[in-house]
Image (cartoon, rainbow, N blue to C red; front, top):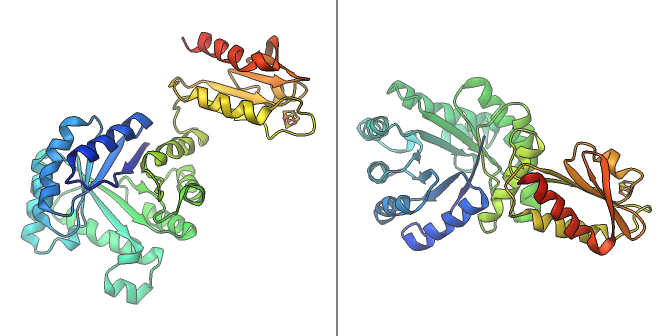
Length: 329
Ligand code: SF4
């Protein structure tokens, strides 16, 4: 299960694109995609590749020459729909180049831009998107090319879920999941979590992208949080914190924010709990490696459910971090 994102820089601007991919890498991104709209962008791929450390997917529409150039430049995956390339010779040329370098092709269907006949027959529906994807798949299979990934994108969550379920019944190829045009951070994360999460929970999906109208770096953390919440990946610390209630006697909301911030630099999969009271806290957070449970202007630090010390409210954060360091070293 891999977390992807897509650059929003001009791919022809190598410096800006590399800078963004390095920032994505730092955030944990495992696959980056760039748009390749013209030959200058295609020729930039090699220069970008030299300076980054994660696989690079190139996104191409229609022009097979761009695909060939990107393969020559060392792209790791080509996203192109073979049915849109044109003549059989052109498709064959792309397939041959990808085969020679063992590069997969990702078929990417967007329900907003389906073939006219499918639109007329089914409308913009999951069935139409799946049928469209299968048409492209068949073109590649006829050329004995099977290194395929597929995505079918919808901005509507129930349609997206239905589409991927249908597709998963028809093919065994790895599927790339995402809700497209999901929106700005708040709504986008909710829609993506639902769409991607439902499918992952059913065993559908190999790579995921949380698409947001935001800096792509913001897409990475939610991606990992989805995988962590479903227990599909361990990645960095996992924090649990209670919602607070009438029993809370410390500034738990402030403390939880500070602990979350302090955990950002840690990459070990440690479970940390920030709980409001001693009555329920350690019990509710019994699967945590370490945690704190608030009391009357104080906090009890506990390890695996057992209280190891009690400190005044102002000492909770430093003491907790000290104990976390001991555990992860
Ligand atoms: S852990 Fe304690 S303070 Fe927090 S919500 Fe539960 S009962 Fe309330």
